[in-house]
Image 1 (tube, rainbow, N blue to C red):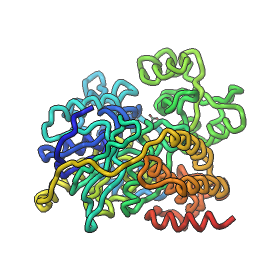
Image 2 (image 1 turned 120 degrees about the horizontal axis):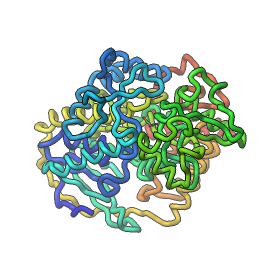
Image 3 (image 1 turned 180 degrees about the vertical axis):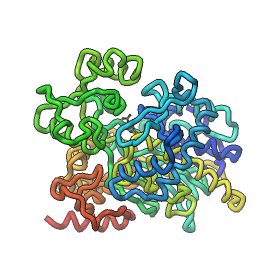
Image 4 (image 1 turned 180 degrees about the horizontal axis):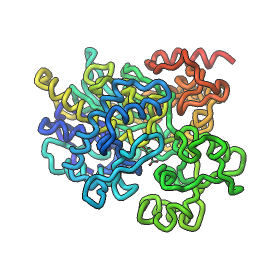
Length: 526
Ligand code: SIN
């Protein structure tokens, strides 16, 4: 664990995944403090990403094409200006990553190699050694951060509360995760906080995300008054590897791009009857079909025996090693799969510079909702969004910095008690099971109300100074937003409203106050 610094730089970044580290590097030489809920390099979804980064660089491609694919995938509610901005700035951000030393795959002439993924009209994904992009990008960024003296890292402290004073962010409270009862807490003064704390997958029993991604940032910002957008849209990846490993290891979509098939326990290729693109249909459609096979008792499997076949180990080293861990040899055996909570399209509302509705709070990466992803994120756009917005946020903060010279104390001080209790662990596991069941791939009003009453009961007994509180707040936001969207769109599917409604083709926006008011209405009505 890093030694705790005595003072704060005033600019504090929460999270040390791609979004957090890229922002810190882009802010250099401005001094920044990065706080990470795990030792750096661990606990961030970015390092687990098996896809790559989408960028319209190859001959014949253009940012307009990339933006169009992003807009089409987002099922009618992508912010088109944001999608175009992201696609247009992608090539520059790939150059940045190359400068930081990311070893993207090359073709025989030494030029960047581009692969194609579902719903992209062109080959435009840059990868590293097949399925190792996330890991290799993080290794390069961590090395760059270690050589950047303006960046101070506080490892193994988890932020749990944002402090506001006079309508402006003024500090952040955090606790030591190596302290079993979490009684060692600190207050870090800040005039600028960048939340880059990841998504919400950890709220679900079956997820591809690390446990740290449990909606903490979403809840902190909502409690401080920020507007939350599109919270109901959680993407379920169709092919998490089923079994006892938690979180569930991912079997990348690129396997299907290479020809792997989806079959049920009776050996039938069920996607052929579901969509004309079969295994390469949009992610939400494949996830629902896999879910239906499992619900019907037939189970679902990836068949990689013919393709990628014996190339598996060299083309997909990461998935291969996950399979081996799960006791599967993918060259001979079928891989059992299950839809797994993978990515939150919703999050804290932000503009084109990552600014939220709170002064002094910026957001980057999965915790943010910029409008780039709509109701269903296009594959390989998430690492891209993190890089594009990190650069924009750094520019915005650097412009603001000279006007925000702080005269007040910057000392990091011990703070008020906080609670992490063993008995909460059981409650969290129970909640995760209910989230997967009722707020998962297929939702309905009765199921959502059932889990809402469970969340309400736990909140009645709890208090704000505990780890479980942020988890309950984040869960409540997603549940109520899902209750409010009485239609099916992208990743949000309601069995009681199975069709999209034209008049609902817009983003959703809620404050926590509104979520709480709506909760009480739902809880009162039978
Ligand atoms: C995958 O490799 O299947 C996931 C990529 C992504 O979520 O963008």
